[in-house]
Image (cartoon, rainbow, N blue to C red; front, side, top):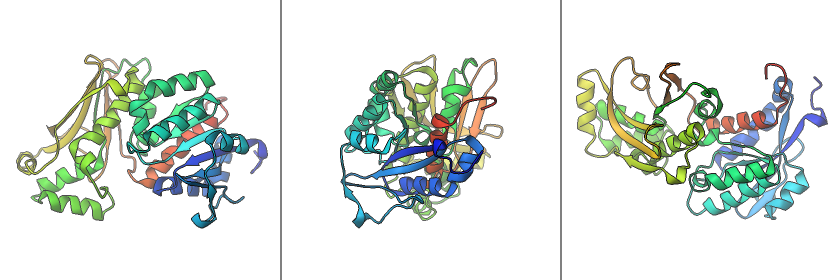
Length: 338
């Protein structure tokens, strides 16, 4: 297959140019030829959009400095001008940005343009609208970056478990919570454990969503939506936080060679409910084996046996790789073993 052939080039419009968006654009610029050689498609960022400005990268994929960006135009105009086949969202999952994220995703999907997103907020509130827009436009939406960064749990829930009668999802999808719990078990104070997580780049500046169970519940809500067709906006969440009262439980579990974990669970037999609870785990449990910021999801399939996926870097680079994977997946030719 010839390198750089025009028919293999896939224009991508990228919304969001924070750490994840930058890592995504850099990865496509660096690995475009390798992606084309392996998968027959060469995604390229044709436009980058931020809240109040946008730009067009150079031929080599490099993004100009912010002072050289122009004003933001309506998304439809950008999609038409670039001939985009994929709209990638790497904007923060904040309530303030949710309406725009939802509106822009619907706009792209209705035009037949695939959406790849690491943004969670609009998935939780506009799942049905996004699905309807994709069906109307004959397009697809992929959310690997929103369900665990480089951990391919979303792919399992969406397709790989079909026909296996998955009945339960049990997960530790938040690396910050696991890291902090292990530090508490070692006798560290909560504040010290959080500071250590921040220094290592594991925890956000504000880790409240991680330690409250909100982030873990969000990811399992999305996995359950993929696996069982739940509407995430209708899911009820009950969560136990990691807080100042947790240290004693973590140390007590460690004294008995067990590990305290923040486990998020959902069951097909209890539709619309996700629980996050502090649970003691023992040897042999995949969630017990996690170290540092590692994540894992166990899909319970009574006849096929449990299917477990673990690992996957939780970082801007990991999320960017998930976006790359999904972009290739929705555009690469499908023949033979592909």
